[in-house]
Amino acid sequence: MDRRIPAMALAMTALVASMGAAGPTPKKTPSPSPTPTPSASPTQGDGTLQILTYRGYAEYGGTSPRVNWVGDFEKTTGCRIARLDTVQTADDMARAVAARPYDVVSAGPVLAAAMIKAKQVQPIDPAKVTGYDDLTKRFRDMTKVSGKVYGVPYLWGFHEFLYDSTRVKGGDLKKVFESDHVSLKDSPLTIADAALTDSSVDDPFELTESQLDRAVALLGEHKDRTYWKNPLDLVKGFATGSLDYAQATPYYRLLLQKAGKPIKAVTTRKTTGWLDSWMLGANIPNTDCAYRWLSWMAAAPAQRDAAAWVGLAPANLKACKGRAKQMCEAYGADKSKWLERVAFAVRPPGDCEGSEGECTDYDLTWTKRWGALVS
Image (cartoon, rainbow, N blue to C red; front, top):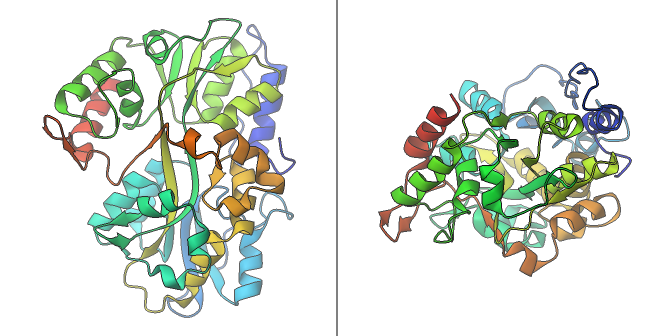
């Protein structure tokens, strides 16, 4: 892996290499705090920015002085980051957005849809974003709602189903969901992955009621399966031999393989993915620095640094060089045919018309069914 791999990943690699099935359970390695909190927040519109993002998406030199594309932004543009809040999970981000306004937010499809509906963000003028056309067209199209652009594509990924080749012989996706020793991501969107076991499903994010019922029933067949919030849990599961399968990204496959574990990915006809994009907060008195930030994050250097640091793929293919090359290869970023098999979550999931009428609503139906499943 790249020498800029996050501190948490390094700890995880050491953990996997040192653990055995009978070994003691190590202390949980805390997630790094990649960015020191800048100075207290002044009034918006005075050449400063207030930013909310995931850990590792906007590095300020807190983990390593060599990893700092936020400081370079300040030096180059003259804009100052007055507040930089970082979170670990999508739930954490939703709570942060509900607590206060931000100038720019990096959001996945579910949160993006919620913020658009709540009018917490405003449309973006692509003409004001330098290098916007360098971003992959498919991802640019995914940020459009009712003909308006609501995001600048940044990082993306997709799920694989990893397996320990010394314990199981691979198999198909249905075999994964029938296993008693599988760890799935704790998210309602995991229903879409289960739905892909149904040959009648083409787009797993546009499920009819009957398709949703079958997917949830499949998930409910094994009450004792685990659902992870922290990827460290699935790494520990493979290290201790308690897992046969786990839902993860290609980054964790590479990480486990680097640690010497015989991990492979199940071959599937389709897989699910997501895009995180930078969104522009509503009611900003002066958007000049916000657009400078959007342009900075659309450019290859920032996307290259972020992709290599967090283990995702950049939306700007010009970033697929140097330290980000391995991530681009792992995700097949420049292979259009490979990407055709990825079903990306839409804004919001379920906002469609299905063959049996309207598709199931994500906020009301998916989240409720998921809550009942994992409670």
